[in-house]
Image 1 (cartoon, rainbow, N blue to C red):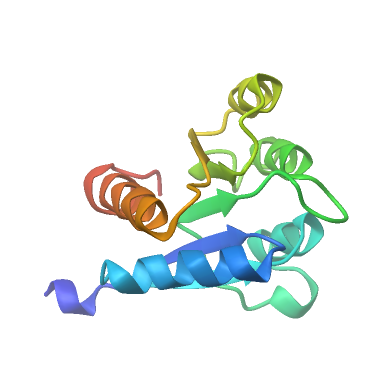
Image 2 (image 1 turned 30 degrees about the horizontal axis):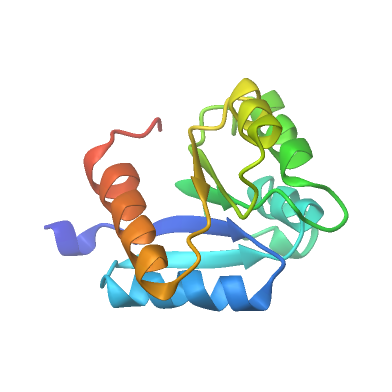
Length: 145
């Protein structure tokens, strides 16, 4: 009966095509049966989440992987908007950023990010991080409806 479950939807908010490819490859490598959508900037991410404009038929998202250094609207501003809206305030959001600045980590948690992962510097580290994230957030943890 589990085969009838829809694939879990992940929204990756990332403007760097190399990082997008790396995350996509990591999900393929760990054989995660997930659907990954990509938003290249904060504004597009919010349009996807709130089903506006070209994203009017976007699927319901189960998990957001959010970079901080984005064009148009940075990750902290996106997170603030996600938490301000009743439909998305409980949506799990994991920061996936190259920044290890304490102020970025602190601000992310103050804005109620569910986790903060510094982008690994190598392929193996990326696979391990995505595998752990996938196992915990999408297989083990109960998510709000």
